[in-house]
Length: 84
Image (cartoon, rainbow, N blue to C red; front, side, top):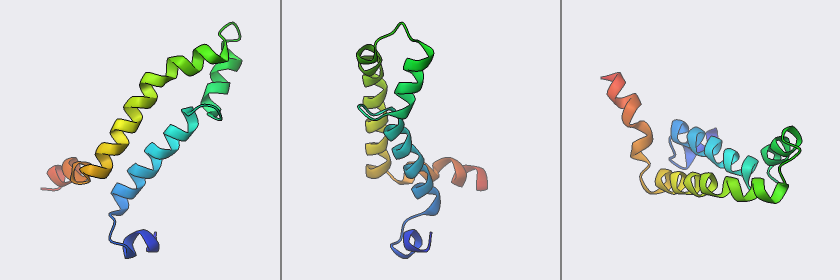
């Protein structure tokens, strides 16, 4: 956390960014751990079909991550609104 604060990043923004990036890692083929959990639960569904099914959600996650990078003030909008 000292490194994040020393380079001028908000700890709240960094926490949200980190969680979203980890979520992408959990569903990103070919190593996405959550995909293999789904495959283990639904044994009749092929792994390639699960990979194809997760692509729209993965694309949405990347768009959300890009918005977090381009518009970091949106992360603090609600906390700032509630703090007034």
